Amino acid sequence: MSGIVVLASEGDTWSPPSLGEFFPPAIFFEGTPFEMNRIHLIAMLMTGLLSLFFVMAFRNPQVVPRGVQNVGEVALDLVRTYIVDEILGVEGRKYTAYLTTLFFLILSFNVTGIIPFVNMPVSATIGFPVFLALTSYVAFNWAGIKAQGIGGYLSSNLFIPGVPKVMYILLTPIEFLSTFILRPITLALRLMVNMLAGHLMLVLFFSAAWYFIFFPNSPLQPILGIGVFGAGFAFTLFESLIIVIQAYIFTLLTAVYIAGATAEHH
Amino acid sequence: MTGKSDRPRRRYGLVEGEQVAWSVMATLIAGPLVYGVVGWGVDTLVGTNRVFLALGVLVGFVLSTFIVYMRFGRDSRE
Image (cartoon, rainbow over all chains, first blue to last red; front, top):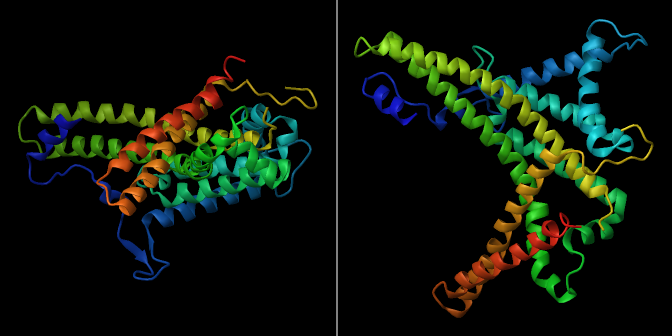
């Protein structure tokens, strides 16, 4: 990749993509705490579309589903079968609504990265994954406290069984930091970093292809540009896989954390 | 998957692996971090130059490794 950057940077009009991509200029309410840029608008649009979809699907549910309800049921069933039943079992179905919302919200925030003319994954900006990780953090802690009581939940997470009690003084701070602080951070970072890296790669491929084809410095560059465009297209296919996998992993890990919090340790 | 109270614990090998990997990593970071900060605090109080910081990081790493063994190393054999 660095070869492309160096090669492409020799011209005057092209510069490699930077983190500035993720800080677009304000569109509304500039200078206020409610300042909105393109990414916020995309997030609102996707949330609105997703809400509309589920409202339309289940507004007037029929025993024999038709139209949008069919799609909505498939969507719900997907999360219930492959995440909720698989990890939490039948008694974990009370979490289906939350986990389905989480999965499709993340999916819709990710998929904007490969929608032409939108081209910006909302989840590549840290605020959105952090908020989603916080909701998951509240969900699994609440589930754990409800299942085991606050004392039982804390002791099962902070005190390792089979260790001499004196060691707890040394080990409990580490357990606290890794379970209650680093866990939600890794949840948010994993999603954000994956989407950020994917977006930068896509921008790099397509902007380099554009430059090589339309502003060539040598006759060979348009051919190289076509090659780079093809690689960019292949990477888009790969990215579409990452988009689904990241939404799946985030939701699945939330389910795993809920399962871990509600299970009795032995 | 059809039983009433079946709560599958070992059906999600790949994701469980991912979860264990991240937990192990978090634990290995947390130990040196906690005791590194404690060591740095001792350094500041005593006036030494990063002696206790280095010691804290080392102790933290050893304790983290111990936690990883106790939490994950034993389970896989049982």
